[in-house]
Length: 513
Image (cartoon, rainbow, N blue to C red; front, side, top):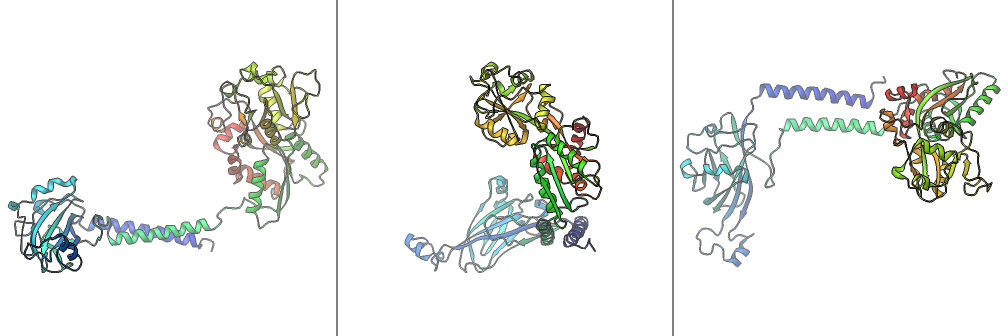
């Protein structure tokens, strides 16, 4: 059965264990009374007299030479702490003696005691007086009824003689609804465990289950294949600006559908060129819709009723200039852009920039990016071409320099190389090329986020369309890939490349226009 997978079984076991653990803890909180606890631990037990480990140093310094009975002296540091869940008052000590606790140092004699404590519990010192039972005799130390808030502690530094290092040390006393017990911490200032052994065991078991489940999920390829993987061969043509999205989406689709014999070819040469190729392929096809999809920056020309549109994304474009062109706020007005691309402005100083000749680096007539600029910004077509190499004018009598190139990549690389050059590109591609800067239009920067959230009127943008010749069959590779691109995992690829997918809450509004 499909649900009996390793990760599902571990997930169910973890959930059951979590529910049981929660119930046990709830029962424990309700049924088991919260106890008062005083813990103690020996943090130091060292010789300071004339013994095998320290005698050489003490003989050299002359320590205890004139003190009878101290040649086998030892120092013990005893820590006493409230490690329970409740505070302890003086009245919580239940022994019949005036003092609260009794420390016994087996086979040793107490010679002196000093009380130490951290600064935040200095109020405890007021209780260590003879009137409250503090004192010692022989091997027995009397500890007063010291009130301890939760987590409070004090330390007793005891000077001893006789006996051996490591001899038994016990702390005893009565405590209402509680106990006095030894702690096992070995390091000087370790705090006792916050949770009991059962709680720690349950936590470890839950952690192991969760880590195991996470390892299984990470180790296996959990990517769900596109809905209705189909085999066959598909050709994607059209927009060069959208080509990076198509290439990555095609690669992912082929990997996700590795069990099917699938081949997707990306061959983009411009939006208009792609529309024409699709129409020609459709007319030559003998049986319905050919396995071709054309991507276009903007809608198809009129008079092609056979082409069926699919709105894919909103693409944002940008005007780009060579780094040598420094304009106020890196901004141009729409009116200035129209004057530039009509050849009226031929030197950047006319717009507050450097004394450099303007070089217009444009796309060819098949470019959807160019058509979007003309439709959304210029309001008309561009002027005629005047240069083949983007540097020299073919006709000396013409004042402006304008060239046309075949792809967005060529435009960007040329603008990056030529001083005074200006061109245009899909936004995300423009941000990857060194030597060019993107310009704002009418004070609005080219920003996908601002457009997506409705905070910008930036004009240089357009809907990306995917066209088929007629309606491809539902079980065709063309239909499956379009579904993957517009409604499936291909949406993540589209967004990664700086486009807003149409089938998202924000994209539905933007693509409706």
